[in-house]
Image (cartoon, rainbow over all chains, first blue to last red; front, side):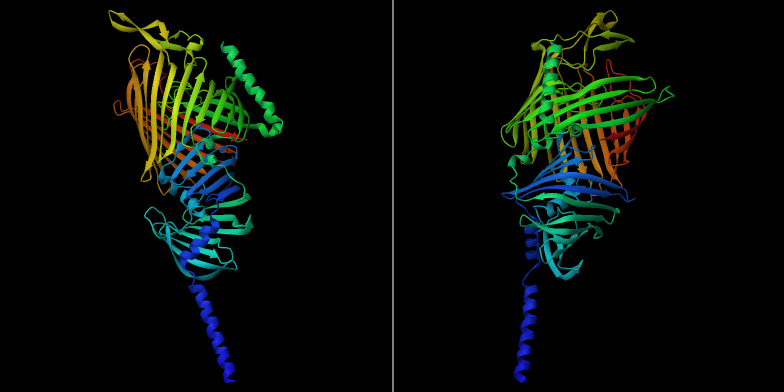
Length: 257
Length: 379
């Protein structure tokens, strides 16, 4: 009986310490690295529907296509609105910190000031800075992460992280992220503005594996301070297709209008 | 020769249609815009103008080529006075390291906002400040040296002036037309660099005839007077340069052009500007404009604008032009209300006090206060 009790005690201790070491073994920065690696794609083409909701609840729909590519540490994105007719052809190019906009009504490519990164991405509740972080740039380069604990979000087990900016260029005071334990995708992100108030809440759903890469089929961004909302729904996604390098040049902003 | 060249250009554009139509339904080629706008001008006008405009666009494009034809049907509803015009109508072919375009089109050069000294290919729609450009027939090509550097060339076969008559002491006089010879063609070259250590810049050269006529002067005992029998267009060369970059989040740009006429004194214009987007969503833009025109009118203008999204889907903008010398000012607040995905309502008011532009010899119509309302639908 004593031997049995001793064995049970050893097993309980072993189980307890193993579980502790499993959580303790992974740090906030390691979770962030996994998150960045999951969100990052060497090459990505997608068609999206962007739904904008005003404070009064009015809904406006936009459709766009976007090409992303990461090469030699350079992040590149070309995005183009395909509808509705009054904004179709408006295109945006980002190559690292350089950004250009093409508006068919102006008929020329315009360089965008760096401060525009804090501004709305194509009228949505996401900023260019948010788009970069959710794309190839990731969070790890600009934030330091602290592991808060494991929590349930929408019946899914997640790692709760708190991120503080590593540089003064970041416009948020802090970010909280809940990372899905099963696929390393963000389930929820809380953005806190420079005053420390909760500004935006991003939630993802429709997680699926495409071409061996996990991605969220739907993103909802609720702006708590403005009372507005943006929903991004992926209509088509392709990680496998090779995207020619010259697409990420200003000449392609004007093409194929 | 003008008719022959126009026929060639239109034929080439029409020939391009079947190439797209083979794989595309006619309804997919069709796009359009309809607008109904009313402008109320002060000073004695009690009934506002009620105008309408319908633009029908046949367009199709991909990474390799693009076809575009725009028909504009516009006029005044009160006087039942309508005109059908051909807007932009072109075919563009995009090669691996070059682009070619042929047809009636608008080519915009320069980095400044609303006033671009280096943008002299298309004539302006009217000789006022900050107006749009009129499409004209041309050949256009760009050769890309690599992903950052390119050389563009434009050839406009014949002269397309902004205006062909001039009002002198309430009488209208015609300017001598520029003969439609090859030697009178307009041509331009531009060397562009994009994304060079965070800087875009370009250098350009243009040869052609001025868009506005020059009025000869008669020496009289009372001093020099305008000569209505000697109104003509001068040949000129333009050298231009522009630059744009961003520092500490502030975007800035500069643009300048020197105009060297075949006869008479040279003149130049320059713009320095900056913009910034605040975290709260406000976009602020400002420019200092030095403008010396062919009549040697010299103006320094301060131009600025504030923009802000309203409730995510609407926009508000206020533009301003101030002349420190004459104390003249133009203020133009405007609001764009998004009614549906396809329709919007724009309301603007133009307030003018004093003379925003100082002129020695004025051939421009006087600027007036106005209120504009436009309902706009795109499909």
